[in-house]
Figure 1 (cartoon, rainbow, N blue to C red):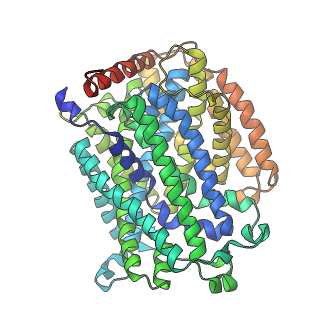
Figure 2: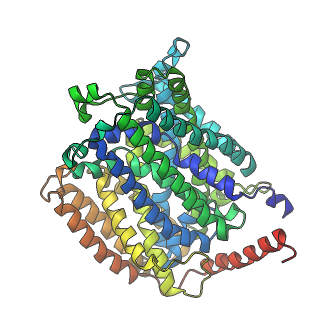
Figure 3: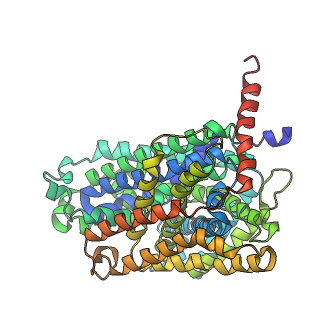
Amino acid sequence: MDKLKQHKITLFSGIMLALNSLIGSGWLFGAGTAAKVAGPAAIISWVIGAVIIIVIALTYVELGAMFPQSGGMSRYAQYSHGPFLGFIAAWANWVSLITLVPMEAVASVQYMSSWPWSWANWTHQFMKNGNVTTAGLWVVFLFMLIFTLINFWSVKLMTRFTNLISIFKVVLPSLTILMLLISGFHPANFGHSMNTFMPYGSRSIFEAAAVSGIIMSYDAFQTIINMGGEMVNPKKNIPRGVIISMLITAAIYIMLQIAFIGAVSPSLLAVHGWHGINFTSPFADIAMLLSLNWLAILLYMDAFVSPFGTGVAFVATASRALAAMTHTGHLPQWLGRLQRRYMIPRFAMIADLAFATLILNTFRNWSLLATVITGATLIAYLTGPVTVMSLRTMAPDLERPFQPNYMKWLAPVAFVLTGLAIYWTMWPTTIQVILVILIGLPVYLYYEMRYHHSDWKKQFRSASWLIAYMIFMAAISYIGSEGFGGRNWLPYPWDFVVIVIVSLLFYVWTLHSHTAKVDPDAYKINQRVQRDAEQFDHEHHPGA
């Protein structure tokens, strides 16, 4: 036991790990893309994205504090709605996590391919027309292998690495904000009326949230929850870690957007408008225009460091999510085996690397990978509000270190907002992501029919709402407004109205579809919460 305690993750390391996941490739491109889509109103897009993910995160904070376990977000839905829904949610979550690894590696290679120095000309062959070339694929694979090896040799090495990189990833965006505000800020860029602040209408705000990677940039809060079983005093540190890291990230992203909008030259806007602003490396290009060459060099370097650090963090998160999925007996058990010395799921890491390589060969474009991640993540997040409220009804006796009274209304709000955000990923991404998730069903059915022989009707009854909801979202996406890729048979904002009303009806359905009893594993894990807190108090306050 003493050996294992040496590798526990502190609150500080947990926050650094979360920031390392949250501040990835999104900050370097998100502000520029969002401003191009929505103009100054892109600031609201970042606020909306933060609100949506924080609301969703709070439902998972209650669950994470109740069930501190590695890969926990892959198991919560099973506790209230059975193994079938648990598997669908876990598979969707895992698809999003494993896709993040090649996406961040592709981002690193893409940024390397645009380095402006003469000695770096050899990197220009890595990308062509926005896609990774064959030569670039080898470099991307090398990066993914390094991400995996850093995690392979213990939690201690991984947290030391991420602590160092995370500090750099927080300092450089903050320095960029400060220098742009000082060196080239134009208040007139924000407009002088509602029409000039929101030049492309209110719909563009939600479009920006969808196409600019805004929601994806925020959704890595689950890093702390998935590693909850390895944290010191998880009862207190899981809620603290998630909330602190999310607030820091939201402040950085919103200020980056403000700094970017203010730094764009008014003469460029006069000629091209916001739709015509097209920087290859937004912040680095602006820094060069402002003669801040030293800042541009730092930004080009960070365009390599930020995705690299995020890739390392998500190898840890994805491997624990895959290992957690084996507990239901619907995946090979060896995937969940922990290496004895460091208690790390090494077999899951190797499998993840293989799957990530397959995904990389299928999707060689950063944007394609990002859309798959966003849609899959949001579908998995639908189960959080449902599980947290179902468990309150089913098992009020469970120990809940974090149990806010506002969860009764927050949970349905989170469900509705998640549905809207899925819609914003646009047709045909919606149907593509659903098909990727459905690929996992034959795997589940194989193990179910061969080894378990459980009551399939009961399992389907508890999970049918999610299958029906995915069909509904695909249909509404197809007939919805043209701004979100639809046929415009249901124009904006009536598409939003329909989604809100139907989502609330689905939410009511979900609360009546839970299983008769809570999964026994939930009680076993929950019993550790009080025991671990008492042990922590005894070790740190022996005289109390």
